[in-house]
Amino acid sequence: MSCSKQTEEIIYTPGKHIADTKSLSADELTIFTSSNMAFDTPSDLITGALEERFLRGDALYDQPRVANPTEFEGAGGLGPLYVGFSCGSCHSNAGRNKSTLLTHGGTGNGFSSQLVFIKSKNGQYFPEYGRVLHDQATYGVTPEGRINVEYTEQHYTFPDGEPYSLTTPKYWISDWYATEIPDEELVMSVRTPCSHVGLGLGMAVDQNELLALAAKEYPEYNISGEINYVYERNQKLIGTGGLKAQHADLTVELGFSSDMGVTNHRFPDEVGKDQSQTTEDFGIEISTVDMADVEFYLMSLGVPARRNVNDPQVLRGEENFRKAKCNLCHVETLHTSSEPIKLMDGTRMTHLAGRTIHPYTDYLIHDMGPELGDDYDQYNASGDEWRTAPLWGLGLLETVSGHTGLLHDQRARNITEAIMWHGGEGAYSREVFRNMSKEDRDAMIAFLESL
Image (cartoon, rainbow, N blue to C red):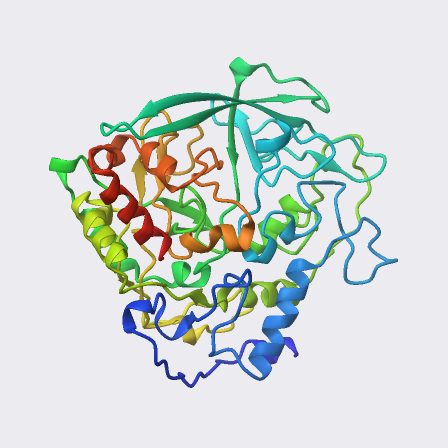
């Protein structure tokens, strides 16, 4: 498909659904599969030439990159410094890979499936390293460092005597490439990249709704969400993507550049270009046309339908979710803008416009308390502030990604632990959940697993 073709407006014919409307997580973009491909399947609206484009983007997304840009045409550009050799290194099946730090305590020679953000105490990037620690490198190049972790487990009981425990990670970096940065000069945040459920819809959400949600305050529950305004392409924009809502686009160009070391027109410099060991420059290694196909793929992924919506335990759990006021941040229903958003090549994504969606988030940032804080601020988001995590697809995480690790760095091993980590603006909901009967807690978990 030519570039001129890709910039034409795309017209969609909505299909018909026969499911219970409560199952429709994303209107006509809902898909009806609960297999390990539940996050990696296009909506029914993506057919014909659109499906061909979706598949091209999918293939580029999963394509392992190699270091030699000429011998392997279309798959080169890896490194010299990188985090993963493909998007799937962290997002297998468009999900959220399990962090190897949980089992190995450090990256070693393998992929951690984590991003390690680093900067100085005064908010500046270190010249030798940049924004992200690159713990992998091509032959002849030294990785920038290795991330390590130790976990401390603390045991607790609910008032009815049921036990649970929480694990607290302590991270540090070893094997620095150049200057070793003392702990007292370093601010670090270790994060698991997000799954891709509903990414395009999150970008397309009606910003007036977000502004209205940010204007609401619930002082009786200590809840007050905030917009994270970000600066991208010389514009001030509302962030909805990333764990701190620090992105206003899908970061395709940034991902190819920073995560894989693949240069592009937006980020033409090789990762580590100022390091003496990375002097070779291969020029632009992926085209805007290819990246736009990847962006189209991500924007066109369907959202899995809710399951067991009429199960009595799930219905009881939904009532408990609301009693605990979880829905004040994990907002059940939003709408996308009537004006279609555009891809980087100008393609108008009309199928995302004017949709009623149920992401269970307000896309705002909230103070979650110092226990979850990382001291790493991004735009308006302080170290203790995190974007409300969308909950759609939550019950399929284990099926898709083979684990149940939650929160920004997977420290929570299951939904119960994730709730019990809530502090700050989440403390009221945590305490209501803590004091529920076991039957009510189990019901609430069953509801969350239905999403």
